Picture 1 (cartoon, rainbow, N blue to C red):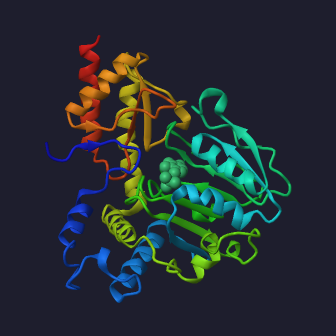
Picture 2: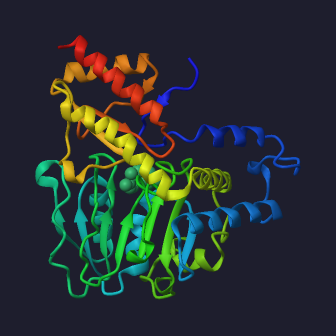
Picture 3: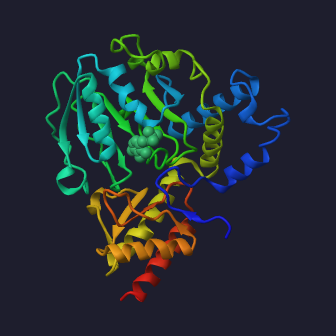
Length: 360
Ligand SMILES: *Cc1c(COP(=O)(O)O)cnc(C)c1O
């Protein structure tokens, strides 16, 4: 068997072109005589790698000059702490709880101040996005926090919450660069690279500049202070250099695909193939309210644990791997990130259809 169709939620599929290019440059990066893994992060070739990566990311999203881009370590989970440490000046923040990742961030926020859960969809296993048009936003809230795409449950905010003028902080780990985005609606947008961008080990923060100050919570570690990282252009200490290099290649790949407009259209087409099939299937059922469906993570069930297990096992045999759902939802989950080709989704639906006929 060659390369499989990998539906993992993360670390996840990367564009084959990117992997092939990295392989070709592995032993000798563009005549430097060594791999990117072996070079100094203060060297000229690496400076070019990180600067080009940032410039391409800025171009893809359309990031204005008053936003900083940081390439950091510690994963999205470390930002659960960095966000309150850098922003909770009044020690109050409002969290919208739409899944496990939002809940973890909220719990972390509570260590540092009065983190309030102002809306939640936990009553229905996070299968929908609560109405966020008129929330009880705290008057003294330092920020309003969302997890924009809920990787485990397969929901997405298709409309951002009305924050009543408060700064919006969004964890976009599993929908980063999946469609065009207006960054000016966010104060902070961040995400781990290992879902929709690159390899594990890099988290990307896009932060409005006025929020990067010395006025952080007492006891904030130097490394978690955004100002430390911003002042050093993400090179305060050794960055996740190889990961940043691969992210840079993915940004180039996205530009070659036509940018976020084109990739967004393709993601909609891909997701429609799967959702249209689910909507007419008599065996498989999507688990999420239609209007809140994610384009990236698609959970579905048969209603029978045995059939679910049989499906996952048989799909694996057919080269469709990592379809088992998260343990908190059960069933199946197909993550169909940017790098999943349309042919992979078509093959999945064809396989599901065959499975359904065999079990009718
Ligand atoms: C995977 C994930 C995380 C956790 O990421 P780490 O980099 O492992 O800390 C946080 N938020 C969302 C939305 C995720 O999908």
